[in-house]
Amino acid sequence: MNTYRIYYPNGKTVDGWKEKPPVHGAIIVLQQYPDGLWATAHGADFFVWEWDRWNGVSLDGLLQWLKRRDLIRPTIGIYHDVLWKDEWTQVDQIGFYEWVEDEQLALFGQMVPDEEFDELMKRVLDDKVYVAEHGELPK
Image (cartoon, rainbow, N blue to C red; front, side, top):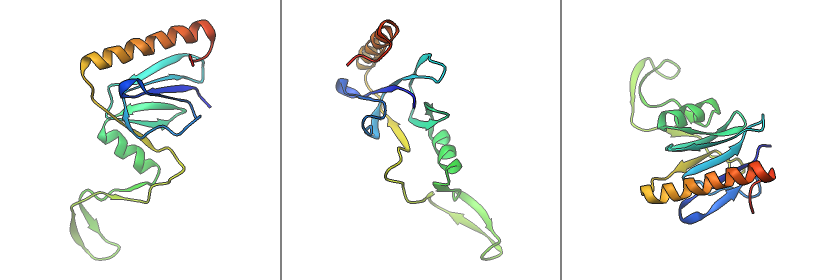
């Protein structure tokens, strides 16, 4: 399992799989890829876990990710319902399946003032330097 640290407002962080990260408010993710390199994900509306790492995505990316996991039905807009009746049907909402409690699905990003983001990014970069020198995230 890869190592990562998620940065939240007011300096809160959550490391790796030690605890379930809060779903709301993620700002930056510092993570180690399988090849050992460290990278950040930030500036995203959502972060989804796929391909052994957190990936920043837009709302469209989140919906695609949910669909690939069969956690959402494609019920936006108009579709032809040939199974139940032979007519076009207007659908007004997205239909979500029940969320899986034990699985971390996605993180919701949060906007913060530039000063707070810059302060967090400085901390992320300091943590990357620490990792390069010590081989692990600082405590």
